[in-house]
Image (cartoon, rainbow, N blue to C red; front, side, top):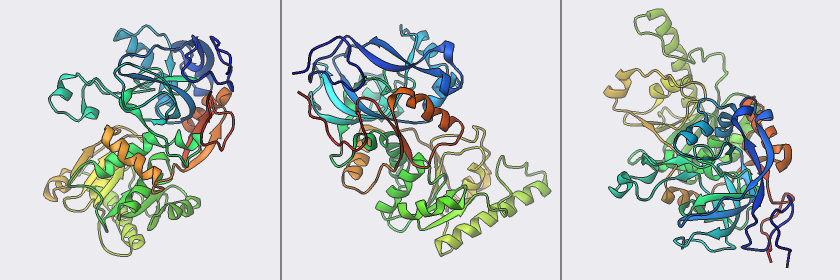
Length: 421
């Protein structure tokens, strides 16, 4: 039996269920806001206590997402300051909104997991007693909803993470810790976008246009569309990424940097006929390329959006009559123009979407467990130095295609379970 101590070094494992007083965590503090390489520092802090509906997880591996680039920079939100204004005492942020690990402690009202269970974690947190949820609202749309490891603290870049009971899902047994720690945020987000907005969900034979198809969201979307019988058409920025798209199930691939596409960015004013005509020329060229790689003259039933400002005008133009443009981010900017004539006369839908509810997370997790969706793990980092390096790469857009993970309590890559005494 391992010795019961107040602090365990990275690589050591406490006895199952023994919660030490302190832990190692990669922290962001407001005085370090700036470049991610400088913002994250490993420190020793107290392990958080769990409430009645909370779970403490021994983190084996953590995923990397863009939200903690924002957290490191303190922009567009000072996450520490925002929480302190709401009453939080901690003057630090522990990021990490994806994780795999082992249930180590739980509150007295938690019944869906037991100590020792191997789990993956989702990032949606909310108050079950919030008036809107009690009135029947989808919890992920609740005014109480927050993203764990970004808006809320005690994320996965630490030896222990504190989560709500409904964030825990069974770890797919075939996956390594690092692969299991990297897919839930992007996977469940993509699943809700594609399957959560009836009647605009993926049906057999539906063409679906997927922007950024080799990014974390895009690799999930391509696989989900394929598994549901749709026809994924991928958009990427370089022909070197084509093969990856085909391997993930894309029917065709478009290079958005094709010189024929001269129309990216904000929609020109319709009163400027020359500029608008040039924009339409580029948009029509993009539409013609979509038909070419699809192999027939059909418009996308769903456009999977996240670039935002640079692409939304094209997405609205491209979507089929009664089709949907569904968006979860604005990586190229937040001001997106819409030609309302296409929206109302062709009865198209522009739908915002944000992460996923518990059922959608479970359905995505089942697809991963069944092998229908792969995490597409591209690179794994050590805990020490890896948190800052991975986010710096993401900040500079130099990260590899697919998803990245960080080993936390896992000591090496390739392990799928942990025997704990």
